[in-house]
Image (tube, rainbow, N blue to C red; front, top):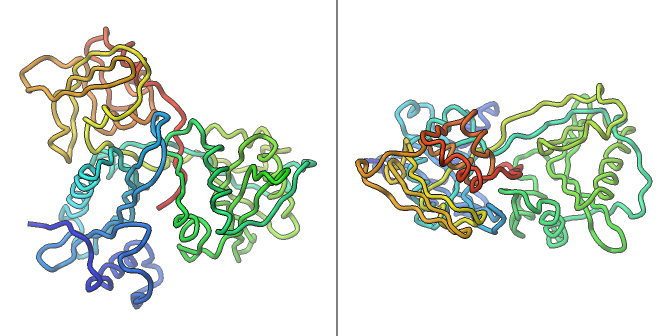
Length: 396
């Protein structure tokens, strides 16, 4: 039987070889790096073992964010990898099952991830949390603006000021990350993926930091400026930062950046035809426990219904549940299979999307895995599971 446990220092090289083959195989075989902290500081390294043989690995992150307007911690399942000689044997799914159980035991109700394959993780119960727009444009497309403040160069020692802007800019948006000091220093403003050390500039007025942009400039044919983080607490800062990027025209040919789906960049540029814009699926999200719905803050509406939930990985989530919401508080009670008929059926991926706000009830019924069997519960469900902005843009 496989065992899920921390990867010790003695298996560090084996773990690094698995990760290198999965995520940087184009480099060819490389010698694992013996330096650096072990265990790592930003995540917990886990492995799936068959005896002493390491068959699959993953990273467990614990991310500060909000869901339904309340601060919470969600899981970030990263770098799930199986060596080629052990693929196709179910180790990745088994790894995910164990990871979900560990998160649940740590009282973490949601687990997010960036999928290598959306269908693969959909089959395991994850649903897409949010989509986003990716823009590719020449700097000349961005309009210039006169500004009342100034642009200042920032670094990791400014992390507290940056975090305040991050929090203000993402107010009301579920799953938006609240980065810790370690995350700012070791990830956001570090060369953690060998892409180069990023620049960070902020827009400041009267000593008050109101926005920032983090980016790298590639040594490629277009000297592409790639924005990894963009946050503005207000329109003034947003215009100033976009103008700042546009002022790089003598140095670069292209700018790429990722923004929420409702971003109005095409309405801000002089020539929308000069901008390549694609909509892409972002990270995925999953409940670890149906009972975690009790921990969320809900609209003060009355709901009493029976849900039939299907979960392909966790038996405790697979079955009938009575969901009641009154005065903003939910109760979830498992029911025997023969106890009553379901008012609605829902898969765990869709229930996860409903819980964080990705979909409202009508959209989930139309697009995803919700089926209303008793129409009398449709409006009460819709009153509770209201859609709201969801945007997780930090890759891990």
